[in-house]
Length: 587
Image (cartoon, rainbow, N blue to C red; front, side):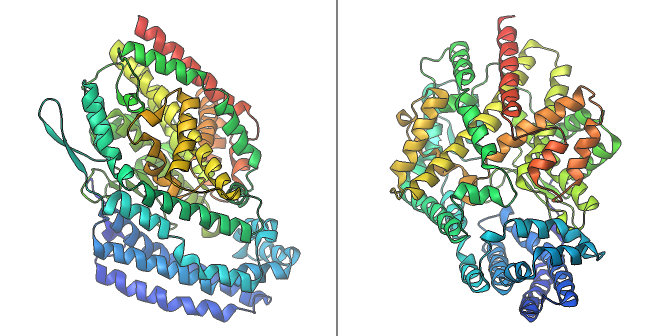
């Protein structure tokens, strides 16, 4: 079965509606706790009630959210999803008193209550986090005012979805051979990869970016709304910057971000060396950014979903049985939606909710990349399964910062397995190119986008205008430094900031791909080289949920992200793979 089975949650929309109404009726009861949290029994009762509410929410929300993502053009599912969003906004308003009231009790009293109660013990670390950041928690009235604005926080995401997916019309183009093709986000990469005609590649690329160019002001204004919302939030909560506000909640030193940004910015020579190798080997007069999809070696090999799954299972079978079992469970029938379809959300993700099996969304197109995407998302879902089984609800939810460790770890394993079992020079080139491109996309490219976010937020902090030209200039400068390519000469590429949904949906998210990749490479290398307790330490991370700060979790698993050395190790790995590719091409 290659489709989601959402009857896992509810047999029908009517059944969902009944629970939604129950959930809605429960919200007002939160107000009865206001002003009474200074009494232990009420304090405990509040958290018991909150978990009861969340338990039901974790059925109601995924049914609506996942159903909507299967077809963003389905107004019924979209309406359900929006209703849950409004419900969550109302919840925020009704519970805005909680953090200020808990802080007013004092850390010593609250931690003592938690440590001496079997149920509340799970809340010790969340309470410690709350008190650590108490200077950013406002008065009860101020929190209530901010909560009243919560319903508009999702508007940029909704606008972006409307512009990029719901109201878009995919362009049909006629190739040089007379064939008409529809260019979509799901198909354009394969169309470019398969094309030997430079004019066709340009045609496909420009067709994809046409929607961004035609609507560049709308995209820029939408992104400006993202930036201004973040600025209003960090200023209200007494942070020095949007970056500090994004990192502080999980106690991530700002130096981690800057170390990553600076290491990558100072080590772009290998990218230029790789591009020159590609340009020469592919016999290209001019190299464009979209030429990155051209392959140094052609392969007709397709990876069906079933074959991709089997390859992944083979790549991990030498790890501990506990690890293997969770990875297989992650891709069980009914929990993976495999193929692209009209209206379906693009890309891929794993969505997990406490008490339930996680769901994976794919847009599998039988490429090598899609095989690696399966392994990647399985890592996320397995992480969720480990965490949910090992931790109570209060500390089961792991942070984004460590999430990508589990996913990219699986990619390292799959690559090693495939390289070890490759039987031809051609396939070795394909795999090496894939590995190098993986570092480029996960480590370098995501850091480039993170640097773009940093610079875009600085425009707001400095009171400078935000428009399409200003945002595009940041990208033009970064691409010139990273790749020595002038994207201003490509029709629309300067609007790549509008193409990246994470920049709109989850600001200051993408840098964590690079930090997690760096951490997972270190952890994987330790396990691969049989370092004592390395696998045990890694399983400890997967089971730790949200029970510690993420930098500490990574360090306990063997990766110290507070130094530049962990990031520089990725540069070294990139050079090793590039050297091997050059040798293979010459052989």
